Length: 449
Image 1 (cartoon, helix red, strand yellow):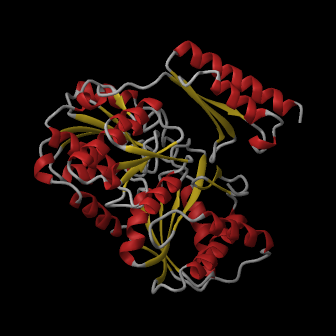
Image 2 (cartoon, rainbow, N blue to C red):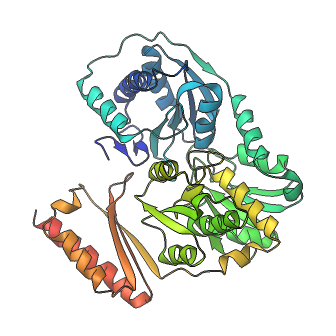
């Protein structure tokens, strides 16, 4: 992670540095200068596709950002409120220089962020992010804009048609589903796609007011969606996050299927159909051990990456693999996209379940999660863990003392001022004890600095 860029772009409370007008304008100018250089060998249109989620702070950030972009001589096309993956798709389809999304994803409404996509629909490589950061530090002013700003929300229809083209509408027609759109970017698109495929759709979280995005709903708060799935006697339910690049599902009994469940089930369905490249899937270090072992027991190798869908995407590309993602619901079906797409993932998983002739509950019952606890510890700074005298060796010893029956993962959040401690094991009591032990150890090591 860099000074400003985290695991998924730049993110902060809107109106606080770095999400202030002057910095945002400089960011737009520098980023486009670097991106023009990055893609100079390709015949691309000098334009940027920009979308935003439903946060009240979005329009002001867009105004500051587009001034900087146009100052670099590049045109800006705003498609309005639209899911993050729509930009990744449209950048490639239109031959644009790059794409940008103004969103803080699953975070509360007071946050916002800026995510960049290359002309290939992928997140920026870290070396490019580092070059942008270094240039901003040296920039004193931005020249007058020369590019043109325009609005083209109709482009989103191309994305909707693409999503519908990835599944068999005859198979899904009449299927009853529940959609929770988190009062975010998917509130129109998801409804249009699922109803356009002839499904019976019950929608919640589709009334954004600028302040209610992710508020007690969406991929981080799925309880209501799960209950609604049971009440409506739906085949399945789906909750998207604020920018719709992740999804969490519910079976017909109202039980949650997270990213691990969706990836494992989809990977095995793809393997059975001969469509799982190299019989291997990509997960992150936060994936549940139960999921990892289940896949391996069924002939699917697992590649583990750092947390962040861009790392998953890089691993998929490097090894020519078909599917990967995160427990949180960022899932990449590489046949169709290079980045996490909640609506696309929901459609693919729904189609796999329908083709199987079994209910979603059958897939959930095929494996069981190891007891797991994830704790987010608020921090005021993020000293490298390896710089904390003896901390990582002590954590390694704690894990060793679990005698192969568990694991410990400690990392800083890439988007928030938090240390995340994940502990998994076969016994709940052991998991809770180890979690407390690691947290106390971290606090001791940081107090003596």
